[in-house]
Image (tube, rainbow, N blue to C red; front, top):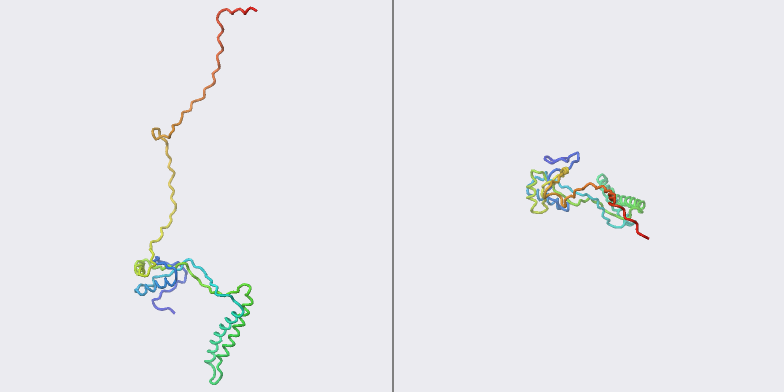
Length: 222
């Protein structure tokens, strides 16, 4: 059954639309923020609560034993037996015994038996009781862009308001072309200046000695 004017849940899952107007650590704070907007006659059908970084948390409540398993099974079966007994009492004939008490005892006995058998099978793998819950690290309050500023102004009274400027998308990296420079003569030339290379000089051969001039001298006397 749907009420007139109520927003319908989309059949195809899609990402929530709108700007982030506030963020809170717990769901109760986000729920309180939406309730505050409703009290200020804000169109809350434009608001969405989004939980980010979902985690499954299992809290251990105690150690499981045969007496505890039997007690829990009996209570569960007794509640079911009470419901069946009330239904049977509606169709019972006047003057007959009320089947409520017997239904509670029978339901409790079956529940206790089922719980003890189940615990004996899974005892080696699961020997404790716990409760599971899905929690989020933070809860963001989103609003349509046309009413986002109004929602921020109203939520300033309770805090948690965030700016709605979207992050600048990262575009493709632009690399500048390499710049080539040529050295020019003058004061801006590299220091020290390059020494000009001279071609190697070939080794010069010694000239033969000149012949003596005049008659040869006589050999010395013995």
